[in-house]
Image 1: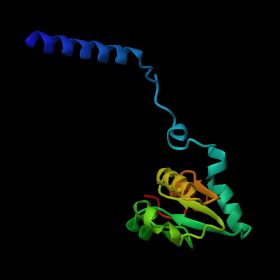
Image 2 (image 1 turned 60 degrees about the horizontal axis):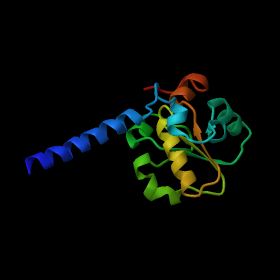
Image 3 (image 1 turned 90 degrees about the vertical axis):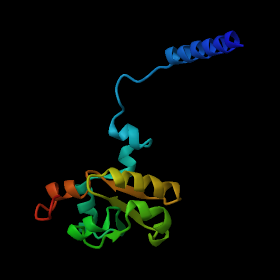
Image 4 (image 1 turned 180 degrees about the vertical axis):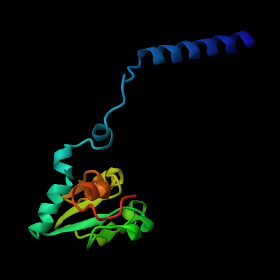
Length: 147
């Protein structure tokens, strides 16, 4: 009986080793855009300068802040709606799907997730602010608080 179990374990081990050898692991990690957005980044992102142009031209859009409440209270863009990313799956109906939605967060990572989620929920025009409010503070409004 012991020999039989030993033989089975040996076969399992050999199979496991063969599977490991056949795997092609990547030599380097993917870039941020490859890892997060499987889509064309130019189509689904907006730079701070482009957003500023939209504001200056009074184009209709919804500005959605997906940071936490304490972050929003510290600093936020005027007329932004606050729905933290963790609450977005439950509260997405609070966002008007008829106009373009610009999503932002601190550095742009959560907003990419939020934009992708909203697209999956059927929103047609959603863009993530590249670099988030931090890049906005560097390039557009240097008076606002950076944290």
